[in-house]
Amino acid sequence: MGITGDVLQNGLTPETRQLLDSLSNGVMIVDKRGVILYVNQAGCGMLGLKRHEVLFQNITGIAPGTDILQVMKEGKPSLANEVRFGDKMFLANRTPYVLDGEIVGGISVFQDITAYELAFKKMSAQERELQQFRELVDQLYDGLVMCDREGRITMINQTYCDFLGTTIEEAIGKHITEVIENTRMHLVIQTGKPELGHLMRLRNRDIIVSRMPLREGDEIVGGLGKVLFSDLRELRGLVERYNIMERKLDYYRQELKRVMGTKYSFNSIFSDHHLLAEAIELAKKVAKTKSSILILGESGTGKELFAHAIHEASPRGEGPFIRVNCAAIPKDLIEAELFGYEEGAFTGAKKGGKPGKIELAHGGTLFLDEVGDMPLDMQVKLLRVLQEREVERVGATKPINVDIRVIAATHRPLEKLIAEGRFRQDLYYRLNVFTISIPPLRVQGHAILSLAHHLIWKLNQELCTAVTELSPRVEEIFLSHSWPGNVREMHNVLERALQLADSGTLQPDHLPPYLQDRQVILKGEAVTLDLEAELAKTEKRVLELALEKCQGNKVKASQVLGIHRASLYRKLERHGLLSL
Image 1 (cartoon, rainbow, N blue to C red):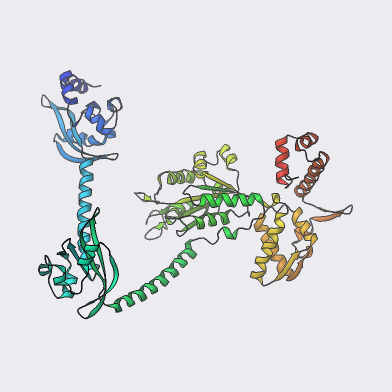
Image 2 (cartoon, rainbow, N blue to C red):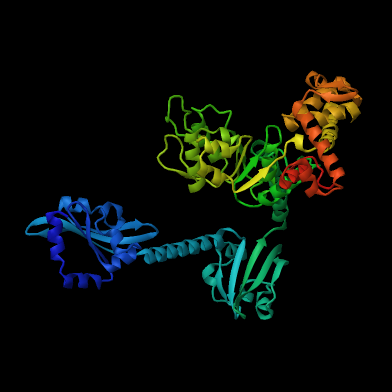
């Protein structure tokens, strides 16, 4: 503490400190450097801080005194300044602290006016609502009238007066039957039963009116009447205009969904395997939440299909679905693509700027495909978006709030990437609220034949072909192939084969050469050149023999095979043998 600080500290006697602590206003004293030397009890309470958290801190970190350095520099007080600190509003006075003609520090006296600010805002809002109500009375309805419990008019708008041929001054205070012929308002007040959309004859015109009693608790205190249509032709015209607008709205809604929405739903996903069915059920459940979702699966398993379906089934289904392929965007363009940019942010920037993919997804879903390929520096910025729910364009000075739901997908092992320092662990946990794992075809066993028949049915419609089934030899090839490209590969294989076969049964010579060449006859048995597939077939055969020998006792089977029981169960599940 400097000499000035010692002088100030010594000037605060115990009696002075006790006096300042008894004040309801906050008091803060700083030295010429802005270091806080004293704050009273009320000030600590208003700031929500303890005294030891404030003392000897620089005033620039405490909002109610941020311009006191300027006050000390100029030697002039700054009074009645409104300052926000956190969620509170303060009224602060700052004055220089002068000793022997020299400014040795500054004093800030402040009080919490948050409650006054809220009350003022509430009063202003009520005034606006009252003004809006008055405008509604004069503009929205053809006619509006209000009565007290005796049936005397207390309010009537100018439109209704013009229709009745009277003025507001003449109508106010009169009984409603003296102003409006054939009215039933006084009867509605007596019975307390509203009459909505009634036909009424008034001044030789048929109009539609509604009459409602006004209540305070259980007591009727008056009535309200309004003319819905002063001419029935208006009603017919309005209905026609409404129908036209509804048709246009449906068209624009469909167009918007076509451009920025999803193409697929859960009905688009074919599943004939329990692992895939479980993934679909989990996806349907989490679709209704706001949480982030991480979809894991090999290339071609249908990760994007799942993302589309989740968005379609979510409360955001009518909002945009924005897809970003993190592996396809060049590293030097990904920031502008994700976050957008302001005009002049860089050479070649589009005039007027451009919103990024994150901003375009506002109110909908952002799908980050192949998120495992996102550069590390972009991962940091994406994490901030997910935490703060705001995005800042390249070259912008203020952030934009966004309301998005994030679905990420990858075929890469993120845990391994984290261990190698190529993927941020905090981003992984932010994305991995729910994980949906899509099984590859090679673990789906005979279920892939059902998928093949489903794809044949769809492709027959698209290609105008008439293929009916797979030959037994083709089925063997399909079951022995490991399908590294999964559903995408099978779709391409069948699309080619169907156009070659055109109709009837699909034969091996309709398949691509790499599938035809994979099968040879070895000692009278068809064997493929797919090592992984043949090992899987052999493993399955050995498991079946072990279970048969042990009469289905899986504990004994694991001992015979020399593997742990948990490993046996995993292998049985992979080959569909758990029920044996």
